[in-house]
Length: 134
Image 1: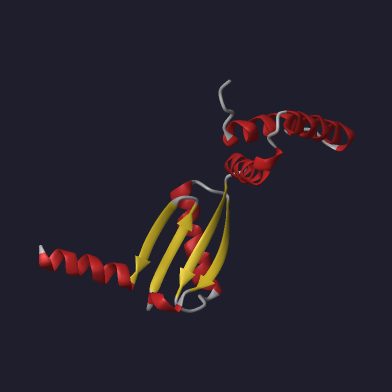
Image 2 (image 1 turned 120 degrees about the vertical axis):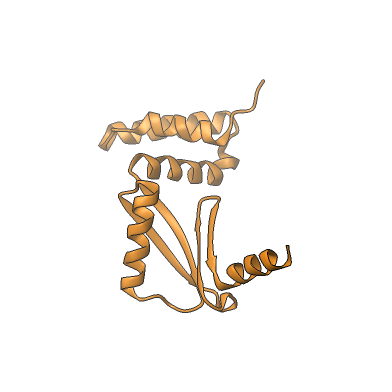
């Protein structure tokens, strides 16, 4: 028997509940829960929920961003970054979690899913050093 991927499980859950509300949604969720329990898949629920979150975000053109900077950015800076990310990723909503990392010296590092946009001074200096040594 082949293993069902977490993403496939999330896709199935999404399709089972999409567009449903009220009692119909409760019934679909209960049936889904029972099936997952019967198949012994509940132990993977955290990963499946994360995959489901990504599916829903993609459907709604939402991206979740971790933004690292050496100092707290101003609301204007955040808005500018949000606008740039909306354009780059064709997103309607950009949810930014700003995290302070004093080791960065300056610049920003943005993490979206498994993609990293490293715009820090540390990275720029390393690139310059590599370029000068070659």
